[in-house]
Image 1 (tube, one colour):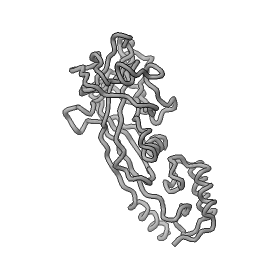
Image 2 (cartoon, one colour):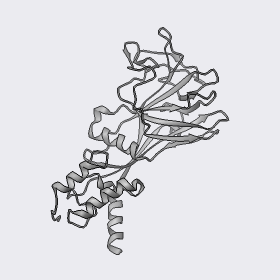
Image 3 (cartoon, rainbow, N blue to C red):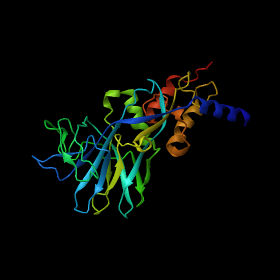
Image 4 (cartoon, rainbow, N blue to C red):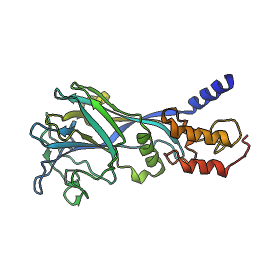
Length: 281
């Protein structure tokens, strides 16, 4: 028991946490038309959800992960925004990983900002990812259909927190492994219920405590690849740890991501087998 406790404390002490501010954010507006594109790149607010007039808003946000060292294993990730205005409805908002680059121009919808402002060069809009020349493949943004995290937000101002989830950690792991694939997330709300839209504070907001942030916990893989449980021998016990992750993700040991792919699976078992019976120092 004492040995296990020491091992757990040692593993925890290796974990590091960073708080990353947003480097890009914008809002896109579904009522945009070919010659009437709307955005809010430099505005102090972001918008997502379905309005009383039955138009949709979506928010885009990206974070710079370059301060996380190469080779780090992402233990957890969560995204925090602040809801500054809402209706009397609770509604769900999901984060989806964006698949391609987009822009933040100097457009500013001012106060309260919900109607957007004419798009400026470089802005992301409903139709353009870089206005006025580069279109999205699909109007409304090109993003992964499967949400990385979802949260039900109450009908009151306050914090909005997505995660931690394994999918958010996997997104950040991909961006650490392949920085050029980091395009951030799109925030999509309930797009069928009128008045479900909410207003979030953007990275330009005057209150720094309310600006979007990404909190990441990471650690470095063990010096002996495959020795997940720290017993200095690569073997069945380590494969058992990987299988436990499949059966019980909440009890997952981050060191089980032996190949540092961001996904715990067959590749990690293969990495253990490759080092089978190796005795670690």
